[in-house]
Length: 137
Image (tube, rainbow, N blue to C red):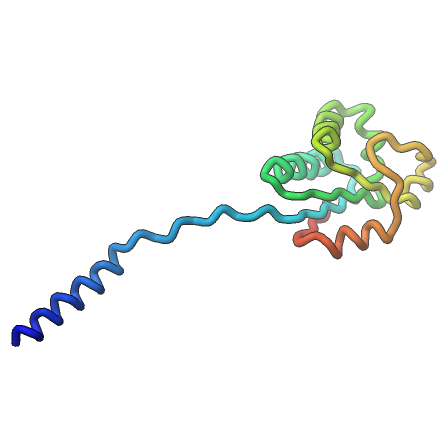
């Protein structure tokens, strides 16, 4: 009888201890790679994409931006919109690179882009392949 009481007390301690156990500490998420394809020339959309790129970079993530189609117009948009210029400059000043579709730039007669670098479909493919997350805007 004594052994049964001791066993019952022991089991009670084990089970109640697990009920009151502290939840495991949240592990800090490791940085990730984020690819962004911007194909819009809508000021608000592009501005929010650049804001997200800057925020993600500040969180320690690696961010790649590729401008496609109307998105290459960012190069001219920063000349007239100070909010876009501020976000693009912040991204570039923090070591980011913005690639622009060379075909799209040439079709808009932009032979010397200021914000982005001439690139190709192969560069877009590399961004899609290497990044864990790819977002389009």
